[in-house]
Image (cartoon, rainbow, N blue to C red; front, side, top):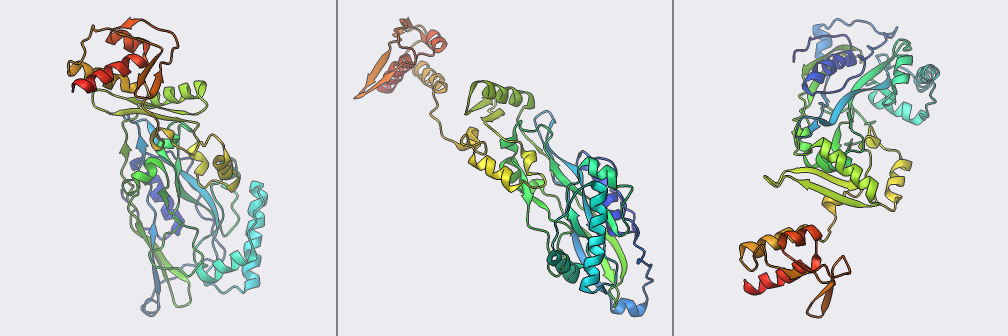
Length: 404
């Protein structure tokens, strides 16, 4: 990627990066981001030898897009899209009194709220803490604008406000494979203390569950770096992207999205709770790993509400539990194949040997019952598999053990 060295505003440069990185990260992006509205207080500062001697410089980290997760055929399971947050830019130098800072901010908040039809609840304490500690940074008042909100405000931004583009995760198949993919969460809250070098421009995300968590290190890209310089009077003199962020690696799974969808639909139609695994017998590849009930990982983008999380946690069917790989179950009829193969290969029995498929079979002091209550007669191996006769395999298993 090539980035122009520009001094037209921090977030304008990040927008250019976002559009360029979208192709590499194979993202889904909405309409182009809105550039910042010019503030009437802004002016161009020409650095001199004297101002450079007293300049303050910050190097800030630019979070990179996460790599995407796909099925074996390249169908996307987890991608990125551009999201838009609404922010206020305070004029520099930062010489507002507390009253002026609150008045300036409230004016912008009220104007934006009327445009998009939303009511913002931001305390005076939050505003003043940001202005005093990090007023040179944009003050975020809204995250993840809906497309309707974005369309309303993109061409009507009040002076001193801008729409900031950032990447957020999107799971294009909704609930399908949701428990396998998992979800991401912010690594921390928006910082509100004194600015530190190499803090991120906005909170990055990390994998919290499923493949997002298991392969978090691979999926996480490499930070870029952005340089901000201020003169002795705290007026911004320059800003530029000095290192471009590098998207994370893509993760290709063995899953087949079509089979995964079929497995989940089968569970949903026949089971209140359960799990299903489809494996390629030729190489052991897991083609589907389904659990029911499940959840939509998009609920966690950009963050899940307390009410939604409580509803998931209180659900008696435990949709947050990936039963296919985090619960223990007896192998059931799948183990009949292993018993049969062991018996045949050890010559304890032969293919055409017949054993009675009786209603029950006793081993020691324990009686094991067949799933069918009547006597199914004498069956060979193929017939026993067809009938799924439990007691036939108990007998063959005991005979194999005694002869080996």
